[in-house]
Image (cartoon, rainbow, N blue to C red):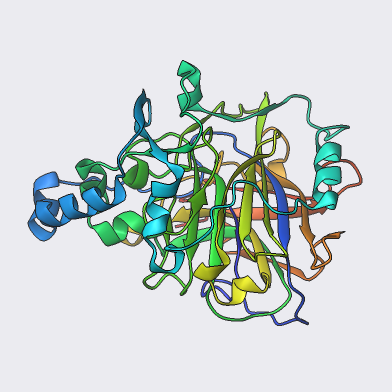
Length: 391
């Protein structure tokens, strides 16, 4: 997972450096199997959940979040509603009532274009690499221009999570293997972009999904996944935040990468998300949502993360990525490669003040490296979770 935030996360070690705004994170991530990211194996009982969460409150939330569709598409992920761009959920946010919808970033960093071209060429020391794509694309149907694709939320989705609050929010009990690039520590704003996540309680399956998440108060009362609350403004009609993605990488075989770019526009202060090798401009988080992120990020984090509620007092058996430890390298462990940032002048820089944060190296670990090929600054990560050395 990649994220930007100007605060010291409560499970990260604390470091303080000279402030310097970070405006962009480049990263490529590889996923080897379905078992990547957060995984919750807990089962749920609809009757039990309904006793504490009334159907009436669920219906009220569904009526608010599911906007009228211009057309609807059946997909393996569920019903996709093509919603008028001006009527998407984000414009229900009181801070965005009069927000101007920008269809493309006012300024695309030139250095970003140059770097992307280089990323598509040359040697990565990986024999076979493919790009991921979203499963709903397989039937060839797309939303019409002027609309955005949004996965319809169902009553079952909310019941599976336990409550509307839990349906929107990110779990906080986690084990992680992370690389942090920190230039100062300050409060609360956070943007997450994860090119791959497996989370049955959230998505209702064990497939790999592309997702985004934001919060403006340290996960207390603001923010949510994808478009499940007002916040993220989607502008592209071809990419769904929350959709499952394929193909998966194979052990000792073809590896699959996802390219993600995230940067702050110098003029508006909005944070733009660009997806894939074709640089699809998915959408943006308006500056008005945040406080400190309006000026720039102070911490960038690339992380593998697994929900760890310690069932029965033991560490979760959930694998991180392929389940292989970082030292097994290419073809076995997952990785992020070619990590870089843009400074306030839109110049590409390497994260220099950085530290590794691993919850328990016997469960999951991380191996940071730097090479002169297109791997650049990169790291391998992963692990099996519960084992003889990770009780």
